[in-house]
Image 1 (cartoon, helix red, strand yellow):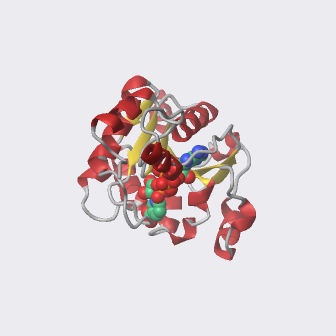
Image 2 (cartoon, rainbow, N blue to C red):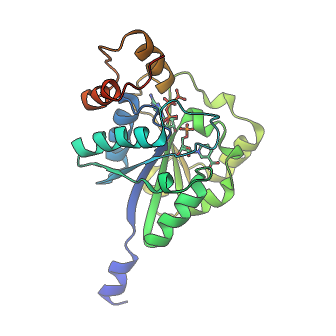
Length: 222
Ligand SMILES: Nc1ncnc2c1ncn2[C@@H]1O[C@H](COP(=O)(O)OP(=O)(O)OP(=O)(O)O)[C@@H](O)[C@H]1O
Ligand SMILES: O=C(O)c1ccc[n+]([C@@H]2O[C@H](COP(=O)([O-])O)[C@@H](O)[C@H]2O)c1
């Protein structure tokens, strides 16, 4: 085999964290940093959902939510915004975004990062089997959500797809599910929206630029 061929076969690892980010908070940011370090990737893409498939509504518009994610990305070179879902006007199915990403970067190995709460419903996701053919799923343990809450379909899925070793999952292009235990912060966007309703001046769970943006644009008020 010549060296050009060997180089072209080297997979680029890509980490993607999708979410509603209504708003993006330190739980997302710290989890993203830790998981990126653990996966040993130089870049992590935040993928804000325009119309989150399993949420009836959002409080802030997709434009504002994406703008807040963008502010965080501008502060840290590790992070990059992927705003492709903003450009689509139908439900923001992950499978559609992953198909596009794999088409753009066929030589990549994609790690899609989700929290345990999202994973508990994974077998309800649109074309979840196809998702597993396009990426690996990294599930971050999140306080309050336990693996013993999974349904039978997910238990079956884990039997055939769970991989416990990071080195082993990197041998495959896709189809693995791996759990990651990090120093999860017990924070959620819904709690933060509640806090913002009662005390707008200070919030320890938001980065300063995001908090400023929220105040400036008068988001999450009554
Ligand atoms: N504190 C956290 N630690 C680890 N993962 C998290 C945390 N908060 C959110 N996530 C994960 O990040 C992704 C995007 O989450 P999302 O934007 O829905 O935030 P959320 O805090 O769960 O929002 P909400 O409270 O409105 O449901 C999901 O996969 C979710 O599981
Ligand atoms: O594609 C789906 O059917 C699907 C269903 C639920 C959630 N997702 C994705 O999972 C990520 C986390 O979603 P959420 O609703 O917890 O913010 C985000 O990227 C969503 O688009 C995707």
